[in-house]
Amino acid sequence: MPAETDIAAEETHVQDDSSGAGRLEEEGDIAADYLEELLDIADIDGDIDIEVRNGRTYISIISDGESDALQELVGRDGEVLDALQELTRLSVLSATDNRSRLVLDIAGYREQRAVELTRMAKDAAERIEAGSTSVALEPMGPYERKIVHDAIAELGLESESEGEGPGRHIVVTAGQ
Image (cartoon, rainbow, N blue to C red; front, side):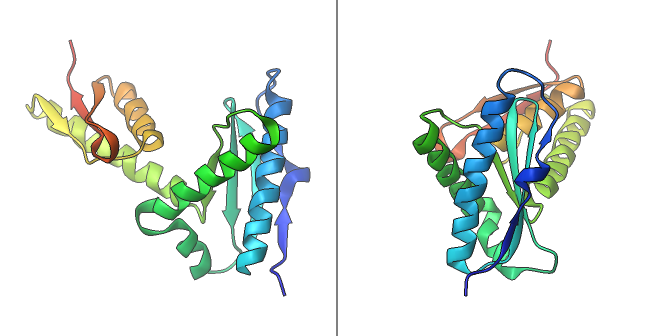
């Protein structure tokens, strides 16, 4: 018997009144339908929440209790989550002919990771302030690099992505 999921589409939070908000809501609904089917096939319980903010659709899958199954959907270092996000984006592309920039989070992984990345940016800033000319961070994907670039900019420092493919990483400097 497939798992029951609760799509919170009726509770979609729209914090962006731009003309693209309707398109983003549609994108969220398509993504939620796709993810609901996936959860049903895998017999995993989870609630799907859709939020539109800052010109992007954010989809979260959460569970009331401790769910090892949801953790498996995150995978090691978020690898499975990244793959599911890409598949969800492809589902939206297939239905709308528009590329999606939606962000998928499962069991709060991306939120927790953002806290870690912000701490990593602060640590790099402290090393620069202590006299290092540059600090190279671990390789990370584009979404995570953006979080770090934004955090570094807020700290008044400069950052640049270097490297190729899976080795792409951020180097933090004091700037000009």
